[in-house]
Length: 130
Image (tube, rainbow, N blue to C red; front, side):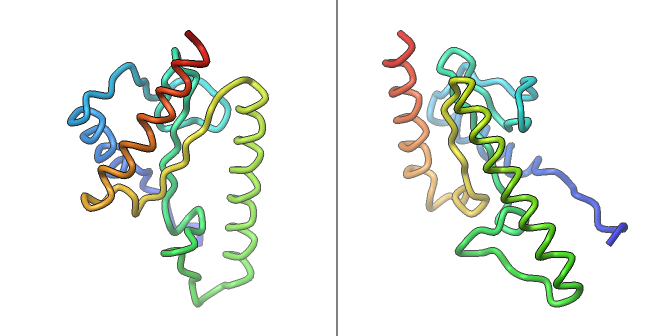
């Protein structure tokens, strides 16, 4: 287990950046110092976006269960989900809106639906904070 290293989610973040650019969504920041380390932050709109990997965050459609060392993985996945809930609660208390995007939503066939969802959240935030 110690040899399994996270490679980050750079590919998924780059895919979302491409979508942002092609849909003219701007004013986002990365590496913004917030609880939970959101992948993207829209400071003016008080909106954060997390890109959750289907494996690590237990996607109901694509999350798979490793066949070896089940006890370890069960605890690991439970900790991940608990941490996600805590981060969501904490950010909401601080006045942030949260969008969680599953890794599989970044496929080209889901692009328009995902971008509508994000644009809607940005518009709702703009109305609230303008």
